[in-house]
Each structure stands twice: as structure tokens, then as C-alpha cells.
Amino acid sequence: MGDASDSVSRFFEIVANWKAILIERKPSSATKLFTNQPEAMVFNVPICDMTRKVDYLQGIDDSLSGIAEMMIQGVLQIYFPKVLTEGKLELRKMATAGHMTS
Image 1 (cartoon, helix red, strand yellow):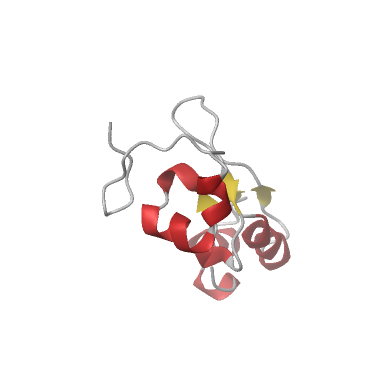
Image 2: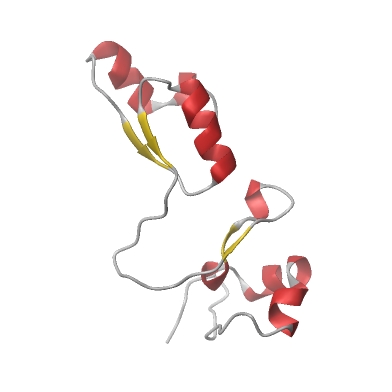
């Protein structure tokens, strides 16, 4: 996430007098949005096409944070080993690209 100068929604706020609606799951990124686009409606929530419980893991920075069920197995093993060893996640087999498979 960059600053407001590389934001498409910010462009339309200025040029077309639009009011942006921004949805961001990562708390740190949502905070940046509040700062960079104070006129926008910012929602710090996840959105999905189905209702289900997921586990959000906060890593040492945003690049290592995300929904555990969507992470590549190797990332979980290296950066979140306790999650796997304590059995807190019921993970299905994951493809190497990090997408869930049945």
C-alpha cells in the first residue's frame, strides 16, 4: 500500500468529486487509508463470498500476515510453527501456489 498519490479512488475523489468506499482487512493498512483519504468511508473488515470461520495471523510485518487457511504451508511452518503444532488450524492440503484444494 502506497500513499494517496497512487490511489485510483483518491483520483476520482479529486477529479469527479466522488466519495470513496474502501474495504481493507489489515488493520495497519486501514489506518493508512484513514490518514491518506480522510474523506473516504474506510471499513476495516474482511469480505468473502461465503460465511465461514477463518484464522487471521499477524506476522512481523504485513507481508507475512493474512488468512492462515490461504497461506502456503511452508510459510506457516517457518513463521507460525506453534499454530501448526498446537493444532489450532484444520488445514486441508494446499497447492504450492497457496490456494486451497479439496
